[in-house]
Amino acid sequence: MSWGVVCSVSDLRYIDNAMGKNILFTLLTIGFCLAVVEGAVNAIRLGDDTPFVLDETLIYHPNPSARFTFVQMPENGGEVIWTEFDERGHRVMDGGNLATADLAIGVYGDSFIQGSFVQSEETFAYYLHKELEQRAQPSIATFNAGLDGYGPDQTYLRLRQAVSAFRHDMVIFSIFADNDLGDLVRNKILFRQENGGLGFRTIELAPEVIESYRRKRQLSNMFAIERAIRAPDLIRKELRVLLERRLNLTIPFVSSVEINSAYKTDSATNWIETWLARSQAEFQEYSVGKKAIIHLDNIRSDHYDVDVSTAPTSHSARTKIALFDSLVRELRTLFDTSHIFGLLLIIPSPIDVCAGYDWQIDKRTFPDYDPRLLTTIIAKSAAKHGLPFINLFDVFHVKACNELYYHHGNNHWTPRGQKLAATIVADRLIQDATLQLSHTHQ
Image (cartoon, rainbow, N blue to C red; front, top):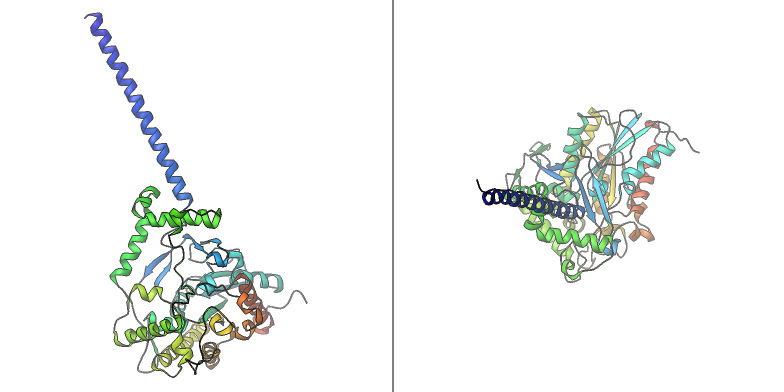
């Protein structure tokens, strides 16, 4: 073998080693860059795309341990608020130890109770726990079982499942006297039997509902880079939240992407008339259909019950009132058979209780409108069935009412409203001798 041949073989080995190292270095560099991009995209992410799971009884239920955000509009402070569920689907908060407390209090309801628009330590359930912790003798544990978008029917069914699974000594069952009566028709879960009893349907989820949630789940399971490619507008939205709401920066590239989908207080839209038309269409669909087929609009279109507050003797209003009355009877029976002290908390709509709120009912157009009617209907039903209740209408019907609710498409309690309601409920519970929550501070 000649030296030339030997040198050629050595050169090839050297070249192969060099190429291998270059390829390895290139791959490592690409991997490092991808990891950096993946981390950067994940850093601006607004949490789980599917904090809820579809359910054939409840329509949907909380996704245990999900973590997600609500982004306030700039007019409401622009805050980015994180919500996290525990393994039972309750919003995580400092509410005491259920295993060791003398008294376990469950707070049930819709978005007013879940409170995704405020920090966990600014929710009604948290304030209530702190009030009772300071003023009552027994040790108390309070948990937040509110869920965005739930109607009283879903809340009742969720409670019925929960009371057999874990301890409830007391339950605060909240009703939003704005859209909750309409939920009983919109959700199609309840129906009146011929004997006057209440029936419960097994619902059927329409294909577009299943597909919508499948896509969201698919997005949640993707790597961040793939998610950015498949859903660029979603990434732009998350980037806009980071820049505008967290860093106070504005970039035209992302500013055109919508952050909120709430009803805007747009003067070009007559929302009262729009909601009345929706109420009538929903009732027609409920009355004609024999099956409880749930479409996306059934889940997303909660709105003020114009038909009830302005025309209480209409067919749709009477049906909703009758369904609610039957549900209250079922709720009272559940409390009695489960040996639970139950309290109905009636939350007034800002449309009814606040002078000059963003949306208002024109008495000239709707002469039968009564701002107290929605809360009164709920209170009468509770009294009829012997269910203790607190009607917050008079408490919130004050000059500072508009400071107790958000505005610009968000009609929920502000932290100030949450705390006021919690104080009122705590006072009632402390004063009720049957609960043995005697004062520790005079």
